[in-house]
Length: 490
Image (cartoon, rainbow, N blue to C red; front, side, top):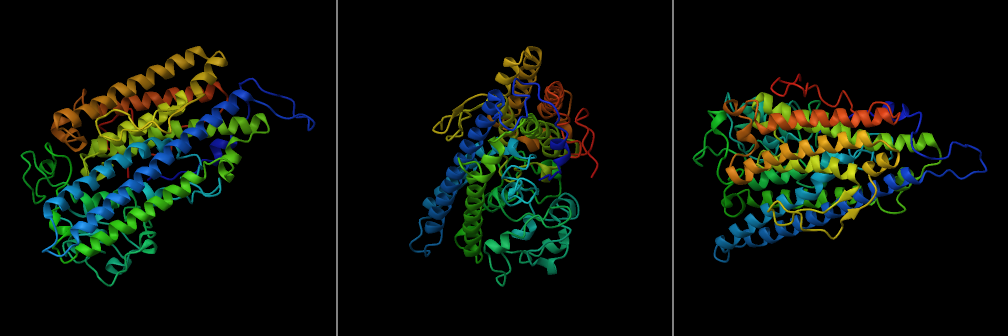
């Protein structure tokens, strides 16, 4: 999670290149159909993708309820084989839920409903929905030691969850398997508790959202190259080249003394996730305050500002957030903790989907999402085929800019598809690709970071040509994404 102040970017808008009315006479009704088409399509895509995000989160909620119903039966009545199948189904539902949501990340960094409740302050629910790295040691037991799973991996500087008197939690304290929310029966697991997420200065005390559910379903990814468990004494072996992700035992949800609390946590986290996603989605509905404000333009300056917002989401996600925060920090530091979906080994899909969201905004289309996890988009009920930045540029004779943008988007796609293929077909997920032994000039994580950097430059060039000012937030990340192997300053 990286929150930024973007008001300066939006205020910098001064002049619109598109065809529109230059007459500010109060008797005239302002009209700029090209920009209006861009805004309407951009809002339609957001509504569609968030609608799909809500639906898949509700499906996840139902899968967790079905799992709980079987797993919590008395020993004599419980079918452990069926419970195991339902746990697998819940994991699949989580993975599917990520498919539409990942494409919505392009709507961040622009004070839209994910980041702001009033189009001004950055007080939106993103931190409750998708913040990371997770404070997993605050939630449940973790493997710890003094090196590979030490303070940097499982520690937090502070918390508001009631652990260690809301103070810091280091690896030594986390070694006590009862020193967490699940382990402390006196802590009530409810929505109010989970609202105390990402409150520390380093924001590593995340206890809500997709990644909290992910951790409870999978547990830590401690699998080695031969699929046996490591105790964490060698970080380079704490990766999985077989079945993806961690291997939390079924007994954690059936016979373990804390099973009921884990189910309660999953139930509360899923309900909160659905509610938060609905709030974001509803801001994009026809007639909603945000959508009305975003799609209503009464002057060139307002039209200019709206285009700036769209391109800021595209440019800042491309370079600072995706290339920098989500990829380079993990790649340069061989940091499994800093990969986005480290428990499920689903980070390869995070990369693909975030980058796809940028392309969606550019081309003015949303095809839907992959509901079977075979890599093909098949859930197309809410698909949108509208008017994007591409059409806007072509109608304003910016042919060279469009050619360049399409080229860099294709380059990014070719490279992120290599990351996806490594995980899908070669059993080499993101945490394997970032290992020291695998970092070289052809590493697909490295080449994707470089491609995203080029993509952000091209997006900025579009904004510059349109007189829109800066749209790639330099403070979104401290990483120099022209040098993917160089560690990022903290």
